[in-house]
Image (cartoon, rainbow, N blue to C red):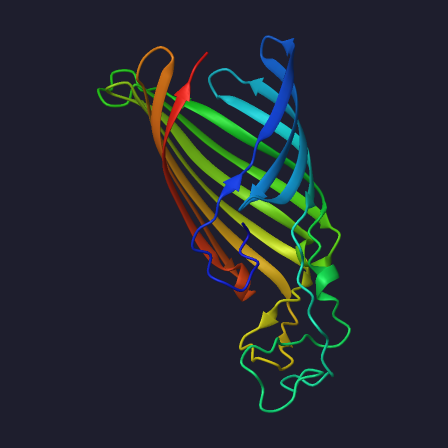
Length: 277
């Protein structure tokens, strides 16, 4: 869910089965090449939402004591199946009555867009994307420590570009990420992650700038859309026995956007059991 709807979302059911496979090739004892392909289909509230495909080519290189780096390049494809809303076009004067709406204006009358704005077409999110980046991992020497048994630090940068069929979702992005993995006492393992994404879009949004008044033409923002995304996550895991692991997870996503409908915060908390074969 990307926050692109004019309502408060209280709850929804999502089913997103995916299938992926990969093949590894050892170039030498310090270099590994991996090719991966995946596909999936999602339903939201039991209605078809999106079909996706992705491919990723990664090169892993061990530098010895300085750590290990991953260089990657990927492709993503998405075909969205949800209905896009039809919005009538106004007369060209912001705040004026929409065509077919008379005074007094019913509170349920739909607002209208400026003339020449095909909202239904602009919101077509289908498209292709590419991404490239690097992530480096470094093992910290924790010998002699009573609390930290092992500690790995990681950090990376990624660039993404998405071309959508409609103008609303054409963007590029710069991703900066940090994280750590730690082995703790009592066979606990901890993973902390954080990321910042600067995502400038290629076009101004077709979503209205507030206020939106029933039955009247709304304003559009002239500046190109710009999203700043903040992400954080924590995973605490412990093996129960040889074939079963238990963990608790927390994930936060916060978006600061100059388009109101794309501003949202999301918190996900869960407990999980993993079967090992």
